[in-house]
Length: 341
Image (tube, rainbow, N blue to C red; front, top):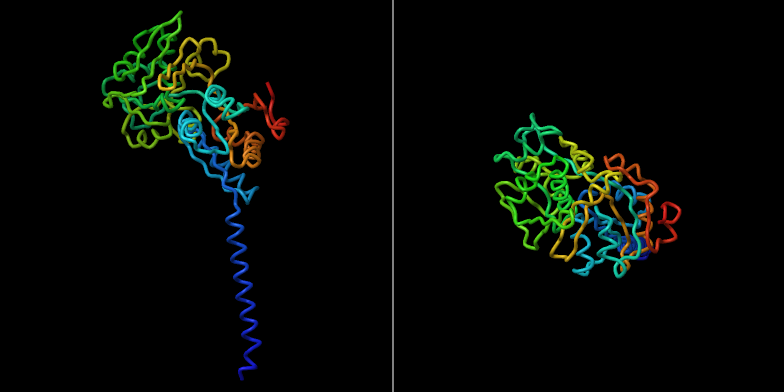
């Protein structure tokens, strides 16, 4: 009887061994999956979620892990905190040449643009009265609360300051910025040779009865919808993606148009914590692969994938720059999908 069972036991043993090998193989394959770390501006969250899904479908060996934050904060993670990222995509391309090159990056691509709008909900105070002509008068009302991101951390935050100071010049009313921000914060403005410089202290603080501030612009969406404040200065693409009502601001102040570059540059922001002055200019997004990226090959593939699919940005309400404009030591793999300047 025992002899008859021996072949059966042998077969079972072989089966168990095969299963064990298969499990080990699956575990090994799982362990070998490349984790591609992407630091990106909060305003890119919606299109980059779509890029992640599309890229992983075509590259099953890659797991894209996105980490949204204010663009300045993204850069600081790399240059100050020693964090390693495979891809950096920022809401202000100039942060790459000014803060990262040549030590942390040696090329970048300008791939999208945007503009600042004033977003609100149906529950915002005076939402039925506000329009493109009286918006700043509505914001000046004492019972209206305004939201924007921290200018120390986020380009949308310092761009909001630029827009509001440009409004002084456009409407020929020097009290607008004073009444909306300066009265309720420790920001200062100085004039030099006909240009206005907004000074942002390291310990930036505000009167929370009038101003609602968070680190990055996308952190302000839920509080706006919950009624914590009434009006939010944010990128047009983000307002579209989240189906918010918004007022389009004049082209002369919304930072969205190349032909008004000379007008925009009348205002600058001095970020004292970084000892750096940022001159207002049209909003252009930049992307790069840091020099110490752990997975450069896959990172460049991801950047190329983004540049080859500008329709994702367009469908998310964000204009793509096509062809994208590249500068620096551009990788060979990207040269056929960009215009090198």
